[in-house]
Image 1: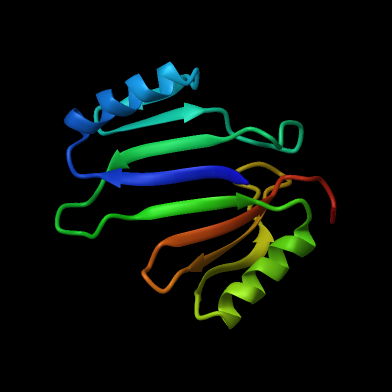
Image 2: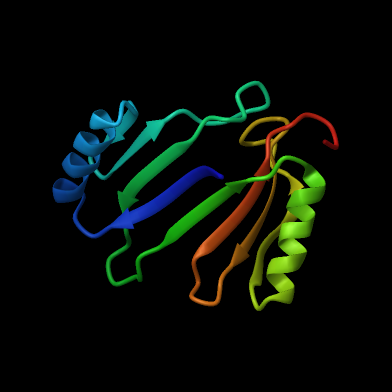
Length: 130
């Protein structure tokens, strides 16, 4: 179901050791780390669509926490259907369905903001119009 998740934390010095310990216990490796951010797991692509990834990073001072949920879609048509359904159910567009080649050549995604402002993404990693 989940492709990747991004969350913000108020105190990276306190929170990152927590996530590093929890992810290590679950056998999800820390694949990069900086003073205020870390990434766990493996990013999906056309050759490895089942992979999942978590990013934990510092939030902006005074800004609300931001959460980003990316859900796997088996086809590009499912990405388009998800985007349309979300708009019809009260969501706001945060990026229409299209290729996002800066992630990888087959990354096809659409972005919505839910009624509380959380970012919801549907992503298909399959090559072609799958």
